[in-house]
Amino acid sequence: MGPAENFSNLVDTIPNFNLKHSKSGRSIEKLYAEVVNANVDAVAPDPDSVKAYQAAFDLLHSDGIDYDDAGQQVIVKVDSPVFAN
Image (cartoon, rainbow, N blue to C red; front, side):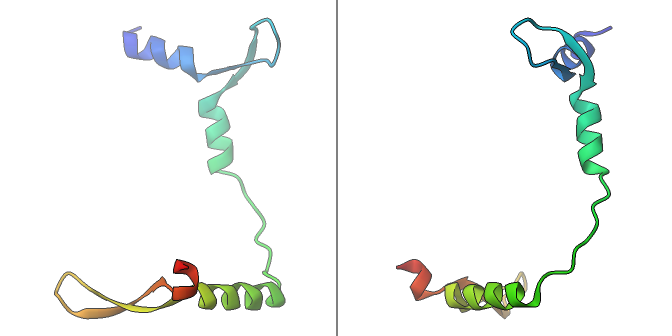
């Protein structure tokens, strides 16, 4: 094994939560894969919550002007005066 692989093995293991270090058999690599590959059921958002979010967003943001790579004006959302104060 090379130094990089040794270091990887050292930092990848997740020990048991004890005063004394003991191996748990788990690794950061496996835990990360579980999180990334998790199948989460999509829940439809509550319509009232969506309306409340949109009202808050609209209060805190207003339309502003920016320029794209071609130098053309584009409308973007910027902080509103309410948010800035």
